[in-house]
Length: 117
Image (cartoon, rainbow, N blue to C red; front, side):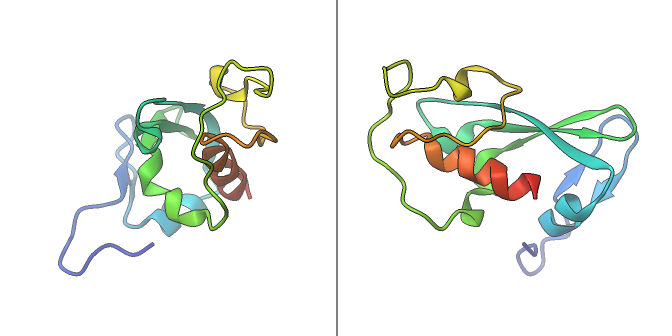
């Protein structure tokens, strides 16, 4: 994902070592970046945080909204968190598994799968 025309700010900068990624694609293509978790924001899903580790030892958090365009499927309207249909993946920060539930949170779990690849 390229930056808007005229925007010179980087996509992300590591607060530990100062490494900078100009675009999201640069960030996701970096072999020194690893997705390690997701912290949900149940009232506004796009405000949840994807957590990445950098090879320098730093952990970087980026709002889910920066990645939601990677998902092209159906977004369900009802949240099923903590119901019988919910496997509870979103309740465990380090769980990156996709969600089989027809839950509004499931699309974020699919975005995680895209990022992992």
